[in-house]
Picture (cartoon, rainbow, N blue to C red):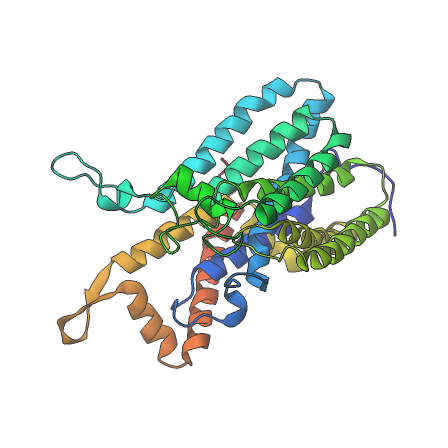
Length: 385
């Protein structure tokens, strides 16, 4: 039952693909409701302090990035040719960042007759989901390659404690006492460095801002810690137990820290980083136990299909989702109607209550993309950056 005690140096981790697929499918589900006015409650983010299931998705993905980079970079460390990994790391970072900017600007890639940018692009948002993934991947990769691994826990603790002290003790210039959405050092630094290039819905701060990227990097480093467990001579049972126990301890630690530094996704507080990493450890442990240890892979196959083209479906879904809003059809009283609105109203809202119609639309969206990804999977079309 327990199997041999051996590292998994050359074996593809099926459970990691499944975990990644579950995470990106959840992200697609959350990002594509039928109506933003009628969102299924568990698919909403916490408005500020606290958390919902939706607030686990992004840290789970960063955690997975950390696990995956251990598998891709360990052979470079063992061969003592770290420098050969740098071009790929920097190339991937740049591509991810540019893809994020592309999504932020799409579809406003037009110029005025006087060769000026479209007004939307003048104030294009610079931070974003893919941009944060790019920066965390870069930072975690360089730390994993060039910092002795025994020092990584100290760096992790230093960032978390330093961020806690900075956010709790430092007064943002001209913002009054610490705290609040605008009156904290993270928001102040976003305004200082990014100016008019922040999230349009907040304008004065950004949920993927500059300062909060550091505790997000810690989330990725927790993934690195989990990834290293697969390169140690643990039996499958011991490896699973270590993942689960460490996860449970981090969840408890995050909850306790929440009393002093509230769990908050928008600020990526230290308690949030610890708490969500704990849940990610446990989730990976469960996927690993059932998929790789017990060999029960059939139920996770649809997730693997999503996981093998995660970034691809994230970008394609974002592009198509916006096109459906931009394409208009003739509506009642001579008013044009967005294609998405027509689909939602006629295929879902016509027979379901608004909240469930919105959820059904999102589920259909996830299902439709699964068919596309399944076609790609069967033809070995895996688009990597």
